[in-house]
Length: 616
Image 1 (spheres, rainbow, N blue to C red):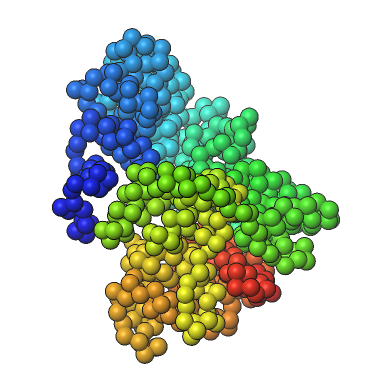
Image 2: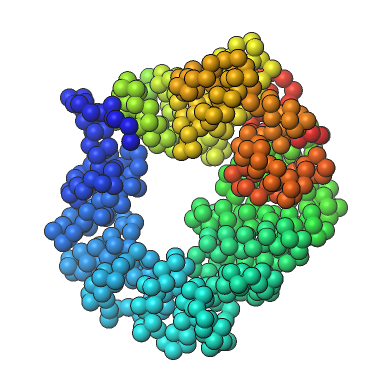
């Protein structure tokens, strides 16, 4: 980490707290539990609170009394398996036996205990653990890749499940006796999801891709038996996409369609984000294959409805509704198609909302809701909060890196019109338009439309860049969210996230000096080079925005590989091509940049069609 502007700072209360926060959040710092607990209680809403909680949990040792542990966990429930064990121990010491057993079983069903901690837990609670607890732990450990830890549970399992565990261990290790171990598994356990996935991955490693795909496509599962839905869905999605790219759409469909990952009786939106995202992508692939490759719109409709039911954001909701409309239209139900496209079109600032609008024969129009009128006391109270004062103080120090962490935390509070107005209102005085974008995006995820202008900032550009203004804004919003000093892990810099080598090359073509430091200090210099580079790509791809935007993100070399794998979008259905991009980041990037372009055209008072950017 670069030298800290915080060095030597003292005497300003909020900066004193920032110095403490900065010290506590470092993995290398070994503070006492009391330090972490005191800070978290005083500043529960400061950045990286989850990291601080994990570090506080790490600091709990035998010297921390039971009442101090329970007081902390009352406000900050344990995150790690070790912390759950520490809480169970404290509950037991406090005479709360039933609660202690519940927490101990929760800790045992987690994947984070080492061998010594297992022994300690078993010493305290071994008589309270049931056979199902040991089986559940073994299964979870295997899903998390901890084969050695899972093997320690062999003596605690019944005979049938010992054979099941031995087979899974052998498959994971590519043991010579894997087939023998597999054959020994009782029939009742052979359709267990973990064993099925281990078998499929073992077959793939042996080069039997057809066997692996057939196994996943034909094995029937009961819903809700999957321990790790996110990992299960991700693996099936990889197998399904590979089968489709190999030309076997039917097998690909069956792999995607028969996942049975999420248990019934629970709202899809209640599942963890990672599992829900994989569910949405798996259901989309199943629906898309059924509709576009297998001509089965009724099957497609069911999957797109599943996708829509799990969608909590405008992006995903519009996608679900648009494809529901496509499936209904293919089935001949024009009324249902129109209803679905009307629902999608409500999300005018999303890729699929814009597509739906054009399907309905309309033009996209901006929608805003009035921002609330704030009383002076509301703004004053907000500005007095330590989180806000810290953001201003860090800005005064020129510490944009740490300030950004505070801005992101503030933006997460944009969940109602008043909060959004307060947070977005800080963008100008802080000189951080990216805060407006962050706040606007978060508010938009809650269905809030009062921060549209903050969410889509507009740069003061010279007349020489007028023709490139739309794509400058569309790309900058996705690349940096208008943080002029943004620096990616790969070294890309500034508003349009240019790599120094690319910037130097483009500077030479424009007869400008190559100056890496100006990429993050001079916004006009950055976007001049970025626009020049994008226009070169646009020319190289025959003015095709889809290919040019994909190349801006993934590089021309990767786009050549994509075209070789899935064809050229100019030769087929562009929407299908975008959804088939094998690089998830690029698939998302293309949609986000093009939807941004439509909004920026509208903000400039010009008619806008997504179809223009899709080559339609």
